[in-house]
Length: 84
Image (cartoon, rainbow, N blue to C red; front, side, top):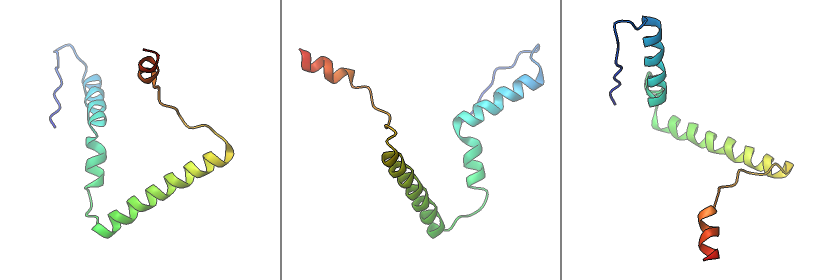
């Protein structure tokens, strides 16, 4: 995971730093560093992931109860195949 930025002599340091930060963000480097900043016990990690799944499931259930439609995947390839 290496990040390289081409720099010209005419480039301002602020713009170069901004590009570098954006590239780090896209690579997920900042999130990974923050996550690994402190040791997390395996049981704590499992609990955090469990709670994350639980919140996602509850959100999905409330969306289904209120009648908000889920995002549908575009299946144009299947419709073209069936018409042939």
